[in-house]
Image (cartoon, rainbow, N blue to C red):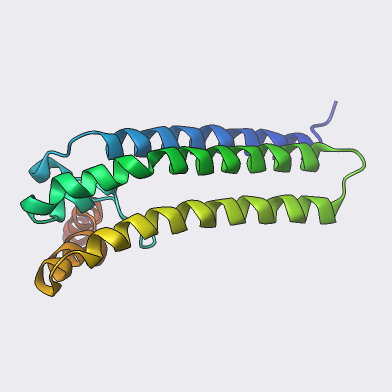
Length: 169
């Protein structure tokens, strides 16, 4: 029996759903625990402009960290709601793509709902970060942005050093 392309797509979507669930849990755990400032700075994880919540809090002036952590924790119920909506949207994609007969328009609409759900999650998180940044003086804001947005992640720096070292040998 040949594997149908819809079975492959359903499998890929299920794997994506699982990975997103693990990522959501990890992000929630990191946002809800107290950051260890030096260790959090070492774990800056930036991908396409995203900010690791613990690194963001660790980069804040010490006087601002507790209030920022409270703001993030206060927003967690809304973030959980949005993650739930995103999970439902991904389930809808799996159902739509495995339906017979396959409806490309319905699948495209389901995929659009997933993109919208991701955008809602990003916008909600960015709103909290912007509110925190708005309370900082310009110098502190510049330092936080340098630490969390503009600097290359440590893992990328190490990889580039290894690549240069290997090229020299």
